[in-house]
Length: 73
Image (cartoon, rainbow, N blue to C red):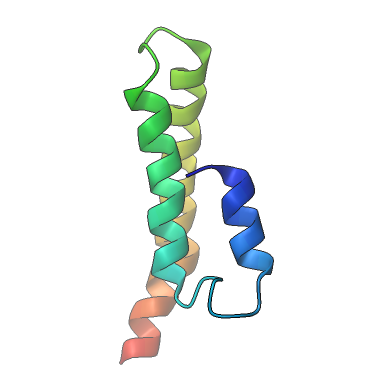
């Protein structure tokens, strides 16, 4: 998974695009996990992926996840 593929799936309006916000979230998390898994913890790639992952999780929790819970109610 990569950010380019995520961007394409976001723009797709047919069944190959994201059907649920959680699918998008899982793919973004996979990108960051893979970047940290396949790069040494001292590398710039690892550090940037870790930083972006933390920022994504904070934004997701505040802006998206709360809304998803409210929609279910």
